[in-house]
Length: 370
Ligand code: NPQ
Ligand code: MG
Image 1 (cartoon, protein in one colour):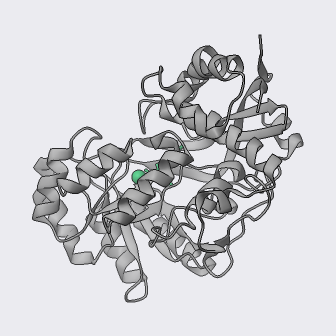
Image 2 (image 1 turned 180 degrees about the horizontal axis):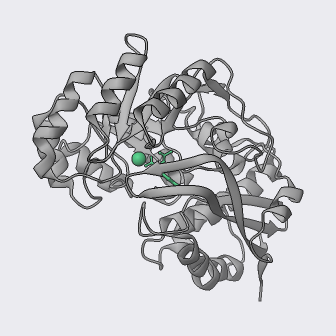
Image 3 (image 1 turned 45 degrees about the vertical axis):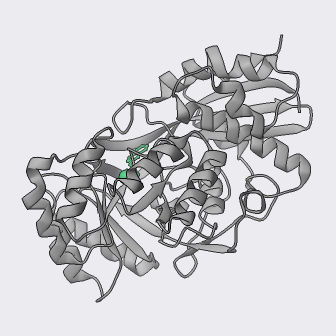
């Protein structure tokens, strides 16, 4: 297809409740959307970067700049573009995977809409619905945490993930484990808040029969994850560290991780996410689909990805109302702890133009051909 324009939309969307992690407290979601306008129709992509570089080095303004000055000009200058050719077109830019993923996803949406094919069909989905978990932020008190978790259990979520940090770990985990039914799926995510000096402390989590502990140490520190995995019985799962399929294979072979959180944005797009899934499946490493507080645009693609055969654990693919009172698309609604994989062409969801306009932080920036 020929890309005639790339649009950058920066939106601010209210959250139903603040979301606190070891790296900070979010009260709203600032999100960058990319729309491509092509000779076969339009496509949308959602950039998962946060407004600040706290989860990863990427952030909204950086992504906008990279798309504006490098990625969009590359796509606009190329005669014939496909989602499959995007990674090659972008390879002259080092890193910036979240920015690359957003524009590649927009291209894939346009291309599949034109072909009448869904993301799920294209990725290789084997399920019509996916098991959903929920990520629960650090709360002001244990009582408030239990209140929030009870609400999610009542809604039917099939797995609870607690955000932890030093000073908020054993106590909340013990309290939630006690609250849940025997055998309920429970896991924790540290977002890099610990160091290997905390090894003896982290070993105490073994008492709670957790599914996994996610990313205790910094992104680049594979060695400490190897040491922890050898010293505790709780499986170690990497999130932030996994930036490509090759890095994942290295981490698996070194036994730094035995379960992987797949986020398409973090690895440069859904095509790479499918490759990563395939590499894990081949090595018998269970994977699950992460979440980045996506609107319905990104959520639709995540749910389609989570329908692949290797996604054997419930993901952070929560319902729209976990984060937003109103979603940018038709809402994703939990049914018996699952979300349906969209079947319509492309992402299968429709972007609500009135909300894109209402939540816009600035005028749309349109990058044109020639
Ligand atoms: C994780 N997500 O798995 C991330 C962290 C995270 C659902 O736990 C704005 C944008 C706020 C992205 C807060 C979940 C965010 C964000 C947390 C990502 O580590
Ligand atoms: Mg995580």
